[in-house]
Length: 320
Image 1 (tube, rainbow, N blue to C red):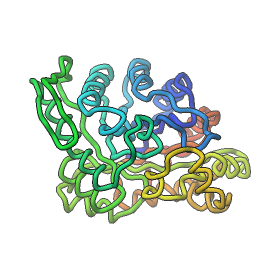
Image 2 (cartoon, one colour):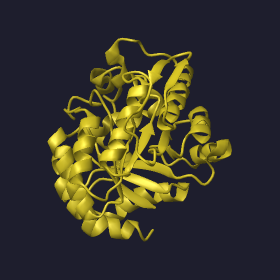
Image 3 (cartoon, rainbow, N blue to C red):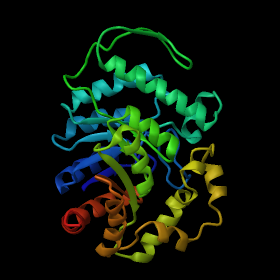
Image 4 (cartoon, rainbow, N blue to C red):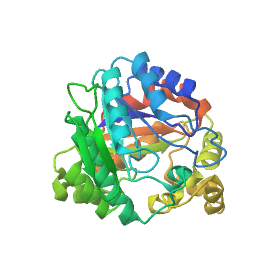
């Protein structure tokens, strides 16, 4: 299993995200992912810079660490033709280190354009059409089409990398896993559910990489780690079928008002004990994931976490 580092836009400003990534590369993380949000999940997190600008800077200050969106939605805030252009540019800037992670989106981020929030079936239809457009543009030449959800009029990418970015698709159930199996080069999930990988494999994804993500809260003081995890990550307990539907930070605060510190600590490894964090990593390894990106809770805690991970956690995680 390869262990990645998460640049979480919801909890850090753009300069800090780039700074932390350079430290993660030096510490030996295998790859890095970045969230693409217009809003944080909770007011306490307090940030939401533009991920694609951060990626451009990240590509220039690093030299070896692979980069990935985890994930961007190509079907509401962005037209898929624009996503294809952005992805091709980042692939060029990073000299072939970029992977385009895509998802069907969350109301939290996509409502800002005023188009409402349709059903999951409708969102999946839009995602499929968007991926088809992006693939076609990656192939070069002019693209024109009149689709059910998107029109493209004589679009062409004038700066294309020799190797198009691989495309990953985020999944949370059988339907999305089937889409990923048909259309994606890799699958993305945030829960260690072996069933999701099985659906993906049965739909055409057998043998392809699988990327997971695990929030952790490292701190020499376990009580401080637990408090911070509860303050900033209690939204996580709702599950993705709920998280995709809520419209703003106030809704996430209301939905998580009864979530206790113990509830959060039961889902997120907290404190300084390496073995506790390894237990979380082990769940993804046993489910069959080939890659796992860690999310350290708290923007201010990134430097300490990266140093500790490089010295203590990563060497032991790779021996699992």
